[in-house]
Image (cartoon, rainbow, N blue to C red; front, side, top):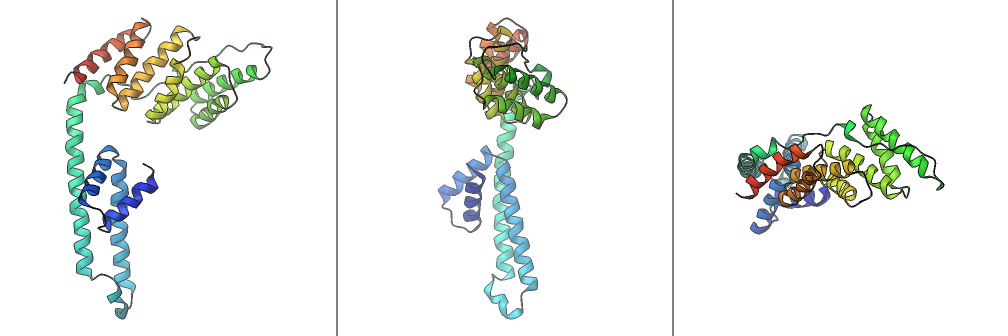
Length: 258
């Protein structure tokens, strides 16, 4: 749901225009997207502040146009009570999730070092333009390890928009996926890593990275069944991530079996 859509629902909610079923659905969205709670709190506070200013600044003869202070306070209290109920539900949901997945969280990456990105060897080619894309990929790597993350993302995105070779596309997606992961953009990261795993003509190490990071991204989205499949594929490569993959597989199995 886009922010503009949730704002419309919040507006209708605060205006008392939602049915009981619609309110339940809205609360479900608050639980699924905790950031929407901030929109609700901001809107509620803004309305309270606006009403207070109107009551303070408007001439006495115009006061009758607005709700009485007692009604405004009562309405605001209703918003606060409802918000408190939402927060209680959210906290209980979070505590249950954390308690159930505590061991799993310890096995998940909090970030991926930019040094895990892949570079390419620059070489001459008879196909114009491809050599420059190799250069751009390596520039993107240098920008990332130097901390210029926005520049790095722009460079990798530029490669993907320039009709790259399949291997260039996969490498740019792997590196871009790492940037998305570190921005907590796990859905975008998963999409990028999936593109890597779909390209067979890559080094086994690069493919192993694609599957391992795909599993991590999916787990961060709580898509545990697909995460397990991706992590198990990384495990089968018997490479650098095998031991970590084995540990994560155990934790995923524990959670999925509950």
